[in-house]
Length: 362
Image 1 (cartoon, rainbow, N blue to C red):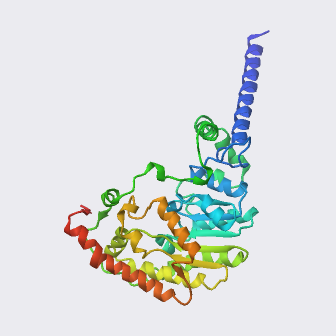
Image 2: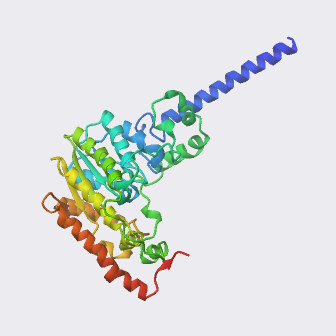
Image 3: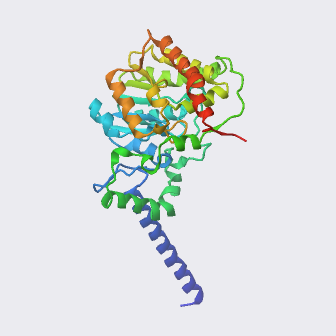
């Protein structure tokens, strides 16, 4: 056999071997599927969910559920079983760190593609009421090959070294060896410390108190977010939507006051609440002025992130029908939130100023 023929034969064998290896790698990734891009867990493995940007869309398309826990990072520490047991549903999370309305509505749309939802438990973060009405997944570098339905760009997933050598072993280890609880999907609390030292240490207070913006400063922005939420509520009358405003700490209220945004944010929240309460399949709860929580910095790790105990407390209040906003008490509720914000300045923050417990921006 000539040297040329030997070389050609070697190249063919190498190509065949390479193709076989790639095929095996692709099959392994598709079978274990740690991002749940193709299917829910097989072989009795657990759904190991700790990377929402990579896993959330896949779970919404492929898992079995009839209720969603929707929101930002403050929702991640909920135990799914709390909602499932309380409402006799099978609830999973639809999470986006930023909690932007457009991003969360995108996740709702993905869920509704193949699922009928009995309940949506939706956390409204204050920043989301006047945020951009365009999704941010692509602009923030999310792996869009897991979001679209284009099979040709799945090569980024099927032949990914990190997926093969890190994600799959992690999935297998947590399913077989660990005590991983599937109801604690995306939960980060077990690695964090909550307390006043943490919260105060991470709050850099502005030296400046800006003039308060007009309450209608974000009026044009809130209109777009109202339409995003209204359209989902209107198009799915079979779903009971339970919206709620979370109890950010008094440090956050101090920050918004010094930034001159308090009145504008409350205006947006009130407008969104007024619009959503027109629908029979909506209930709204407001925990923003829950003083026992918001003024106790032992509940927080920074200005907004609270412990799982507070997540559970909110659900208990909802089940009891407490802190609910209705058409009749809407004005009263938001007047109460504004009074609480004023009280933060007149009563609570002076204590920390007097005792030199605040860190200021340089």
